[in-house]
Length: 509
Image 1 (tube, one colour):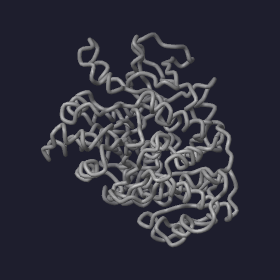
Image 2 (cartoon, helix red, strand yellow):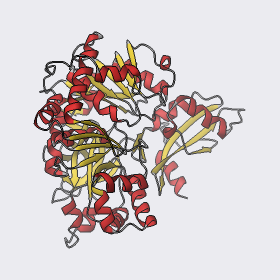
Image 3 (tube, one colour):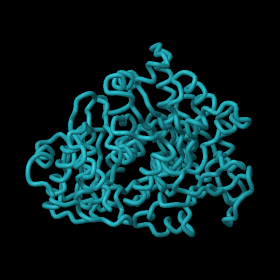
Image 4 (cartoon, one colour):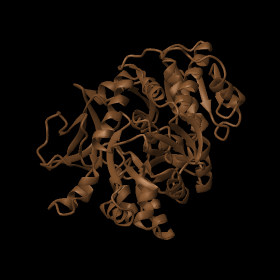
């Protein structure tokens, strides 16, 4: 089954049902969305693209994002949505690795289309070509058949090697995620509306699937991103919104609620369900959110390798204040979602007793097919059908999972994953740098921020502003260190390994 069949089914049953909004402006009904996607699919096939070819999407949040994804699927293609915050050099690497043949972009991200090389074609989202492909010509008569095991979404997530890895997410993976949403996160109806305030290249965009299953509405804020006041106004106009949000966004929504004097009734009119995840959220923060905005929150834990599917801390769990272990549950990330099993194991793969810390494993139909063109990484991550997440945690006797630490040194800042090795490799090429170690430091707003400890080369006089400018030339702005600490040497053990734990302790002082 091809995921495009979800849109075809809804379009046949309710062609006049409102589907895609640009703010409060209706852009497409489900019937129009399906027809445009079918047309786009034919145009892509006319360019010589065949089932399984990759189509890159490097766009800010945009109403046509959804039409481009479904059009590519209609033609049997694989979409490669790319983080809009990335540097063009990083996008070029992903494009080359994915062997993408076509790309859809927005002009703000790629003002000069020649900046991306090696493609057979590139389409700007608001161009005449894009409009013609969506509105002119004969649509494909039939959706191109795809097996459930075929890749639908190639998601690039940074790795500890310093290079991104392409996660092969199949039609089955996303179908499983969509059905699991109804079981464990929220019941969706055709009257609901999902707002894309977080990047559509990531979890927010993936949540298109369950809302498409229900024939719900899809709302892209005019700002293209997160603006708390805009979301409150938008929710009041088009109906209560559901959305995915990093803890940083949740905190800002709560701040706006208090600052603007919104009542619980105002919150209920503006928001139906706010799913938070992507980074730990402190118990005090979710308690404040519940107190100020009411019972409209659900926490999920997953990874790109098991998209949005791992554990869930439901409304009921959050509201069960009389449970004797409610405080512990608030600090957890919930219980296994219906489509998967969760295990905590030691290094040999033996299950740990309740309360003991080990590596978190996920098993089920949401687990990726593997890493694109990287069999070694695939063999390391998936063993005997289980995804080894690299996250350390403990299961209690009731099945609630609490994360303790990450075996990888990943930094999560504002819901975005940042890998120290990637930043270190850039800084090590900067003039005058001998050694560097990057760690995360606690931050009240962002969760964590990137801090670089830098050892100057002998005789070199490093300038922090120049280091920052160098990072901006080579990596995305959100990945660059927020602070540079110049040191004479880095702490190391007897084997020469940098003691990052000691560096983190220094930052606490």
